[in-house]
Length: 118
Length: 118
Length: 118
Length: 118
Image 1 (spheres, rainbow over the protein chains, first blue to last red):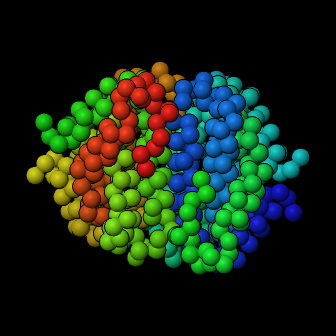
Image 2: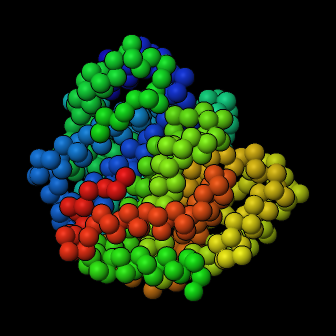
Image 3: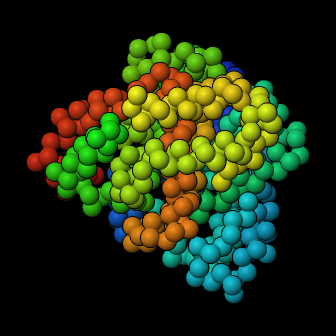
């Protein structure tokens, strides 16, 4: 098992022993994911770009950011498991597409002109 | 290298060859992450809970959901790399906490009473 | 002044006396808006659809939902003011479009087939 | 009727003639709101702070931002109506609290130290 599969299995068991599968529906988990991303944004929202670059240098802020990133990871992993999606494989498929679409010469230094893939 | 590290490295190179590191600041990537989560929610928002449970049975909807999950994974992975956070390790730390806090006997079948960890 | 303009002015003064205009940039306010929407989702995420319909019958949950809706309103209003956008007028323009696009006969009872306006 | 009530009524009718009330549940509307906020973030995410300050000077970008702000307003207004919440009144209650909590002398020029109201 890879390390991500390990996490998937641990989350599955965490939910099962608490009989939380009934709450872990696709819609509920997607909402929980968005909620955690909101908490992550809240950690960064009032920082200047420069302060945000250094946020991990402050131990307390770093712990909060790490904790929010963990929550996002947990709900994303759990949602993907419930839907039967392999996140890493899906990401590589998307990057294959991205590499064809955003050829380096055309898009060098210019992210904003790039039309969305989806 | 684990499979997640592989993805981290591929994303790093994807950004480097396009000179997109300048755009990949913590705040910008957090916004992009939230944007992609929004697109994921949009795929599920009007479905009934039952329809959402079966969303992956419809090939076209499944492809869209997989694509949005991929985008969320990509920006989450990239943001964590820029911040120097190991997502899997952070998730396990959070789950250690969760296991202490939400003991199975007390919280069985009842997710809503659980006070938030963070 | 309409009641929304009243709120706009109060928010402007609230920020001015605290010298918070420096933080109220478009990107920061958009992040704060997303953060508050995340907190709103968190109030509803584990409820069944039926429980969510009745959420305002529980005084404590109702107070939390009202508070989160207020926060969303505050940041949306403030962001629109900073950008110089009249939210109500913009919403009516969008609805004019929506009425043309989603003619009642075609889309009756079927929200999911409707192609997005934007 | 105030202008916001006008919008509430128009949205109610828009949904009624299309028989969309069945889709306009609190959870679905909250998801739609988050989805639209995600689209708004996407308009700003790769801009520098300075570019974002000037985003309304570019007619095409301005039209997109205005359109996303309109969508956010529409779903927020509709969700509040379904829940029976007066957004403007709720925002003023929250601001009463904010004025007591963040006294101008203590928090002048320093948004980040402020503990959250909720």
